Amino acid sequence: MRFLILTFLFSFLGNGAFATIFGEDDRRSTTINSSKLSAMEAKASNAVAVMIKKERLADFVSVEEKSNLCPEQRFAKQNSIGECSAFLVAPDLMMTAGHCLFVEDYNHNNICDKVTFAFDYEDGVSNITDTVECESVVDVLYDPEEGGDYAILKLKKSVEHRPYLKLKASSTIGSEVFSIGSPLGMPKKIARNGFVKTSRSRELEYDLDLFGGNSGSPIIEKSSGEVIGVHVYGGALALDKDKDRTCQVYDRSCPGGYYCQLSGAFPISAMRQYVLRKLKLTNQN
Image (cartoon, rainbow, N blue to C red; front, side, top):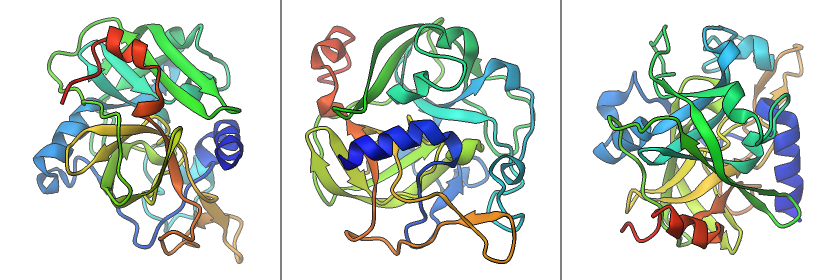
């Protein structure tokens, strides 16, 4: 039931939906801190793209303006044009959250006409040029009642100059995980130091600092570098109203651990395995 409620609200509220800071804010830029990325993290970053509406590709709207974030908050002055996150699972296939295909003025029937996927939407990049468009929706599951939430998109052209991420249809409680995506629609950030807290048949939970806009981000097992799930919801309200002002601040109500409402993913193991086999996305270990 919690998965149902949180997934519905997440898709309804968009970039201002659910998330929290678990303890210290672990979000870091993937470009400014690129020298501090491990080889595994750098590969993952190169495979992650941000879903952006085509008409907004050249826009700039700050996180402060879009989410009413107080100006002294981290990343408040950064751009906020991302809709969701996604990642390559093959040179010509992109994976994201299913609910990302059902937002505002587009759905799974016309999404490829409406959005593009930007690999270089990163800090310090003023002109986004490394983009790719989708051709069709290969598979989509968005079922709040049963907890299904993922999509696979066929790209118009293969992305040969970037790596793709391998999938893993299993997970272990206690495994360390990290993720890369577009929190609150901002340029790509890496979130580290998370751990799998619960593992159910159609749900993984963990304590990563992820926000609206991170939907579709890969949840990557640090020990293997493989994707164990697609991020679909966060655990608490992303932003709290500052008691003395009209703007908002990051929610820091959760110190981390088992007693917090956690962030969650739809696990690879719960996806339609016959589709993954047909696309040759399984048995890649």
